[in-house]
Image (cartoon, rainbow, N blue to C red; front, top):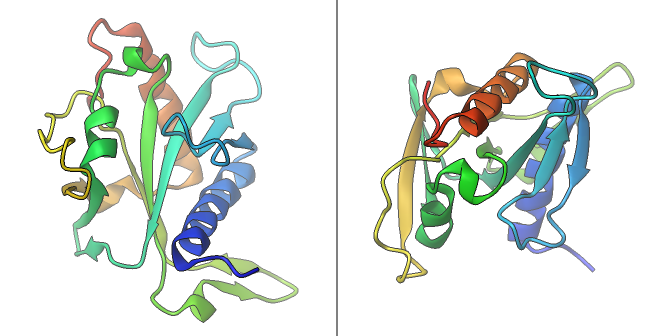
Length: 181
């Protein structure tokens, strides 16, 4: 059985994020099979960080070949029904949920470059958190999408994953439970 294009993109996005997290020495649990909780991956820090004993990040992964990437911004659409859930304060979920958009090359054959010395996964992933952003008021129209944009400096890297743990702790401790840079 061959995966559909949507499934193939989704799996590639999850593998892309997993590779970055694993290279940072973090643990990864794939939760996308259930797909009930807006969370595809749970990334754990194996030990204490900040005031948390075993912190975890919850990640919603979207993978696309159609993001609008400029020199400074990344723009991508997300279904309004998902967007309007993710803008709720993190306290509504128990843990903050971060959105990671993986931009994949148009040609599937270019997604990975493998040799005996290296594995290169092509293009990039960008992260954001929508907790506290304004609602789209489009959730009832399930086919509508909301365009979000993020500075390209939010490139997902080993270091930015560690920063995300710090943001998650601040959101959990704040009364509002919203994301602020």
